[in-house]
Image 1 (tube, rainbow, N blue to C red):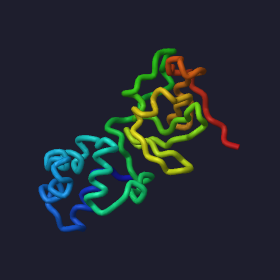
Image 2: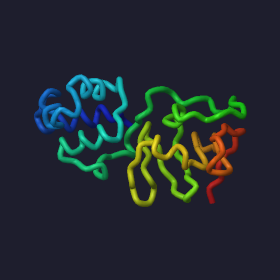
Image 3: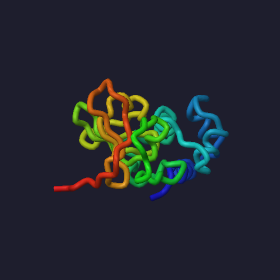
Image 4: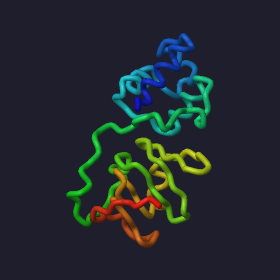
Length: 162
């Protein structure tokens, strides 16, 4: 696993561009300072920034090696010590995957969610209120029974694969 910033730096250098030149390729949408922060893994880009940078680097969102990235800014939580409390949107980038009420499963890469079958890419904030189940380290860590319920931490339960 490597970081998005390493991929971005490699792409930029393969094109022979400086950070300023890459910023210019984004038509002013992303500053040189932001590119520097992404490359040093000091900041995680939004899905819009990833799309703008991919286009500038002559890539598509689908061609980015998402499965190879670790987009988390901090270590995973110890999910086993949680009580029945609300699972906040800010905690979601630390999880591994989610399942929505419409039956779709998304792999999480920091703030970016990629649907398993279609490879559709979404910002996690777009999915938060559709989430039924959250999985982290091969265990269910949060659930909601009905779409109008709060997303709540659950007792530790290992997933069983058939």
